[in-house]
Length: 255
Picture (cartoon, rainbow, N blue to C red):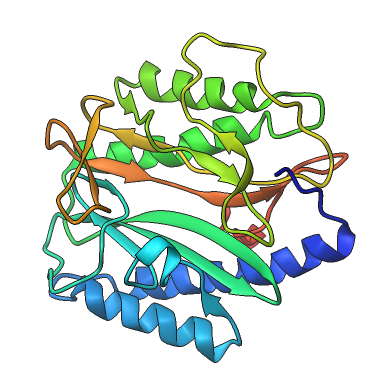
């Protein structure tokens, strides 16, 4: 169900967004060669709970951890565990924190040590895809306008756009309407029109090779079908009468 937030709701979502961003900052500080993804997860949970929040993903449809840590060819929903990060890895940390009844959702793909230049470029273009989509996160445009901008930027750089995993509305529930795909498939000018008070998670998932993915036996981890790296960049965004507000990214961290 589509929910429209009032000013008070969006202020609460800003607070949840700041908490989510702070967790991601901690992940960026900690994520170094030799650190396990389990250590990242435990630190994330401790910070969320220390601030009066709760980890939204923990227990969601049976998911066993606080955050998702997707390494290299893992696209999304990688489960933290004993894996030790290695020099040259990339790891996408997907954090969702609930505070005062509202969720903040954001992802960053972190570079571990000396990452190959072609992989660094993938991570950079994936972040750029978000900001290309954000240009259309305005009243009067449609969701498909965001999708088309993301797809165009990724494919013009030679990358595959994941089609089976998408962004979403967010608020009191972690997943609300509308769906926010990263791929439009030629269906321009379709879908719901954006109006003030909508809050959405825009999250390009971009692969170095094919767009196709497959699910691992754990039932959660999605990986690229060709084993090539994947990057993920996400923020929670509020639609306003003017410029969109990125609720999970402070002005001083906007590259």
